[in-house]
Image 1: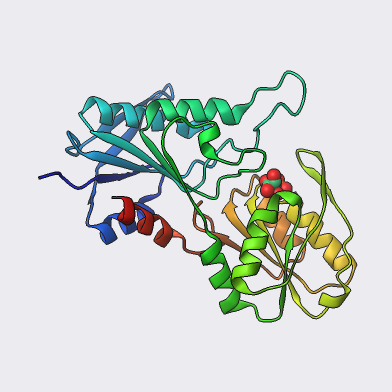
Image 2 (image 1 turned 45 degrees about the horizontal axis):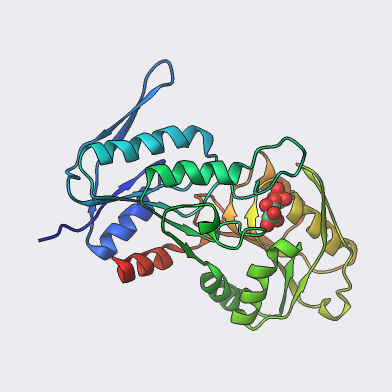
Length: 296
Ligand code: R5P
């Protein structure tokens, strides 16, 4: 009889792995990463993986220190006879550098996709930053499944904020904002953003007169430096709107970004648990479990 898949958590994603394993009756695998004094790393898999599908759960924010251990984990499972190796990466890194913005730059999203495609047989992720690219399979050569947090975000909004208007800080957010607005039966507006540098953005001044009594809800996929959100909050406050709720799918929060956003005078900050963070209020494990259950 074919054995059920075995699931391994990497980089602290034990809760998500346990949740998936518990619901689907999968075994939780035992894996250790040992770091030598010279920073090299060895992966050890202490569970039986031969002839089984192996699933690794690892969100890929702050990817550089994770990538070699991740690839080594996959190779170790393969060497031990795993029949198929799936990566569940709730946050998929390196999706924003999807073109040569300045002459001579690398196109990191393509190189990262090639690397992951060489080491895994399948990828499952949530709301990757698809803007200029429309499908992960334009750069990934393995089967990919893209899940969306929009139902979970819409349900949270409906349960928590009554009189509201959804605001997308830029055209890249339109795909999330439009759908969440539709699902949560909320009005919405999309602003215009000019990114001046890695840490500086300028937001257009919107006409929000008719929404002055509503709670603005800013929605974006990634909150990284938080400058997009901070500048939008500043504009809303300068035109005397109420303090907004900021919702991000992926709580990257580089350096002091979380504190900067709190200091900008938001009403609250809400994120999905695709990346572990104190702002996580929307659990998205059900969409991963539902998908694996349907295709498993
Ligand atoms: C745009 O490309 C994305 O959808 C987000 O707006 C962006 O990643 C946010 O970045 P930051 O938090 O650094 O302003």
